[in-house]
Amino acid sequence: MSGCTHRFRPRGLCRGAALTLVFGCVLATGAATGSLPQDPDPVPELPARAVASTSSPVDREEIEDAAAKAEADGKSVKDAAGEVVSRSGDRWGAVYDEREYEEFEQSLDGSYLGVGLSARRTATGGVAVSRVQPGGPADRAGIRAGDLLRTIDGRSVDRRPVTDVVALLRGDGTGAGEGTRVVLGLVREGKPSTQTLRRARLTPDAVTVSRLGTGPSSALLVKVAAFTKGTGEEVRDAVRTAPRDAGILLDLRANSGGLVTEAVTAASAFLDGGLVATYDVRGEQQALYADPGGDTERPVVVLVDGGTMSAAELLTGALQDRGRAVTVGSRTFGKGSVQMPSELAGGSVAELTVGHYRTPAGRSVEGRGITPDLVAGERAQQRAETVLSGLGGGS
Image 1: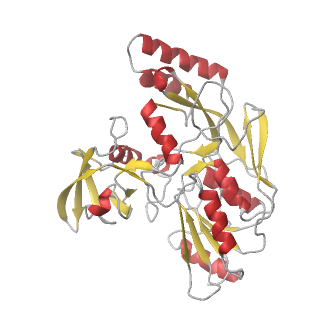
Image 2: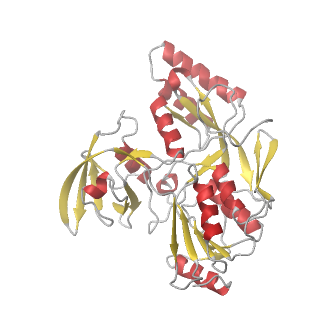
Image 3: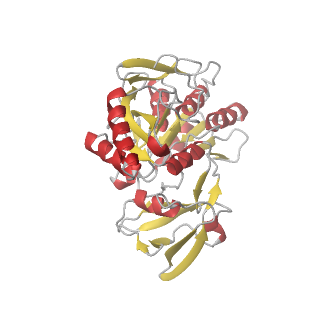
């Protein structure tokens, strides 16, 4: 792992190459296991997966051998390698074909292929539209938050894991591209309807900033949906330009993770240097540090929930351990493992777990998550605003 440069991005994947650290995870994995909140936090179409730089010679060789044999036999490389990963018991290990991995790389740049809606599981086991991206295909078709999603291309989505629903919307595994058709069966106020949409390349706002009050020093709500390229600097800009006495409510609910470099940059907005996290790869220890010069005086409250994953947990743990923020909400997802991407025959890519990261205080996140300082449920944001006001962060 020596010589790993965190500025690199996962472009031009090659055998043995050092790549950017990305502590992400498959969106909706938590939803499939009941860990994601049902409301108000949705599962969007934008993916974020986990990669890290190092080598894993034993596992990698076994998977590469299976992939090479499959290619020679004219079989599916992805399926053959996937079987090896599945047998390994690696919870986060996965294999992607060339198109899927290219889509993942594009998602890290902040774009994704889809129809522009986010979905959530309802209390009755159905799927509801929770958000619609303005200007996207779903928005243009008149689909609205609250609509029930019954079918996708004729397939029922009731009782399906939300991760499957997202995959169907995106057309994963079907070779779907821009302009491909997807037919949605919907219900609004008891009335069924059918909408035919065309998938498009979309760029959602990873960071949104709004005021929580009307006064000149009213607190800012900074919502970070995922740590895609440029997200960390957007957070820093929001903090730099905020009124001097305004507190920051950093909303990381339903944040699926992403580029760890962006999470570290975001941490640098609130810290004057120092440790953000440590991680190990096959026993070799590394550390991530904030840049100096962050705002260490402004009151900060961080909102989290069961959909706060990976890089978002890394940021939460850093601010909590460093005493820089009060955390409010529910226990985070618990994704603290590091994966390595390896190119296989035919352009497929395998990701294998090779290590874990820890918070500055040495806490492991994997399988445990982060318990907030103040546990709150449905009225979490209201509780967080009250805490922020009590810290002198404005209203």
